[in-house]
Image (cartoon, rainbow over all chains, first blue to last red; front, top):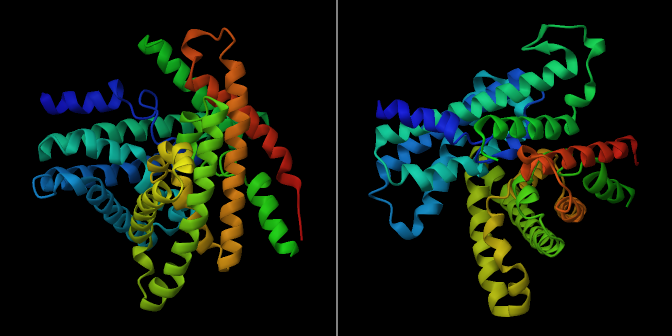
Length: 195
Length: 193
């Protein structure tokens, strides 16, 4: 029950994209289609779970003064593992996501969760937090990607919904990313009555 | 010479780091609330980006590549940038207290600014020479400062208007950024050299 609560908390109440507004660069840069958004979300989910588990397991051995550099090294190691795995088995996807895979290291979501959750809680709770926040990020990226792909080319995950010529290419290009995210955050604010 | 001009124009206008490459968005949204802090942040980023790109380029081509360790690039670069920012903070505080007073608050934020690590990785992917890398880093940072300053100017005006409640703050800022990105798309036809 507690585990489910932590996951729900990360998915909705503290959604990293719509509520905490963290990790904006990959959110805007990799959501030109639903598929790239989903894969970027899953890549971040993987690193987040691994780093949360490792950091909470090692929290008693890391001196307090050097904890931030230690967290960064742990995160960077898992990102390197991810890079090597993707280069070996998913080279096309690795090419499409490009620079944003190594840049998971400086995604503020990861260091933020390490500092505010994993360094204070047990291994299982931290893993749940990683799953919740990671899924929240993945869902947000997939929704933004699907919406941009739908408005821009008339497809979702490559499946045609309306003819491509009616779509507005603007939404696939850079300005569409900012505009779609702006409206989605406003809708999320309205629904949760935060504002 | 024309090659360097091409790098400068491309990095500032055509491939602007914020509006076309989506790097450094967090400080772009967070720090751009007034003009003074936008310019301070821009200056700090320019300084760190130039030094960091120079150091990581030397490490990449004199240490990682000869030793066949290119796969630990990400770990090494982020460590170097974190150490460098700390060192710069200490050095600036000793040498120029007035510069420290102006840039001090922004320096710790820069370690997690993805634009710095991003530029360090991009120059190794593009096979730039050392001089080309530094020119690219400085002009990218100028593009970043310009984006931040324009945006801060618009946001101080925006604060005076009555915006629907759920749109206030970040959503309105993102829409403005979208319009600016559209304006910057106008540069994409430029071709030099």
